[in-house]
Image (cartoon, rainbow, N blue to C red; front, top):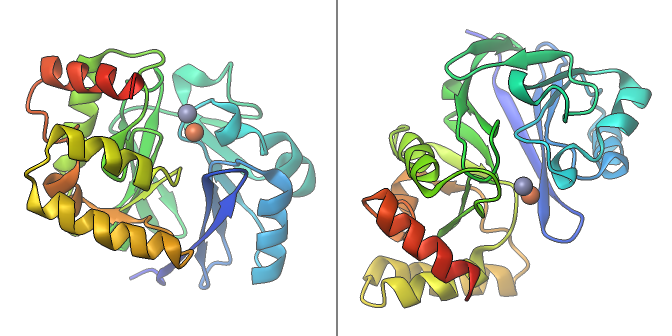
Length: 243
Ligand code: ZN
Ligand code: FE
């Protein structure tokens, strides 16, 4: 059995989260996306960790913006979707849907989740009961459809919903309160949603992140996961864009 992984998360930029995954046993450290290279460098220093890997979920600047800086500072392996190699700075290893690679003795599974972008991937670490979902899923929400279709997002969210219930979902943004406001217009009678919103409000008032969420929780409160069809998801997504 490989030594356990520690997940360290911290706010970055305006409403992004940065994540570091570290193995005490091997000394390896992975950043999931690089919203802010300087901040990630500082967080590694504070923990006494050396960055060895970058795992990019997609090519948007608030997810790859720190790649160049971190490559200069510590030359990590940079992993991202093979098809995004032209738009992920410094990509050294392209991966594809269903592929599995090893990090510090742990298997990391790549799941392609198009919708927000084409080439968006999420990283599932079964041994850590964790998945890093980038901008595909947010608490009570999902990413905007910049490149993909509602049908693709529907499939992508279904893939997340089929992960084990206890899986912790690490979303890349703290959008919870505004997502919740909208979610309540879609499902005003949803008691789980109402109860969760109260909890989220007190967490945010106390300055506590609402991330990670879990698969079990999102199945109860996320209107996009609960949409049931790509047509319905498309309607809700359009309504949210205009909310
Ligand atoms: Zn994005
Ligand atoms: Fe983003």
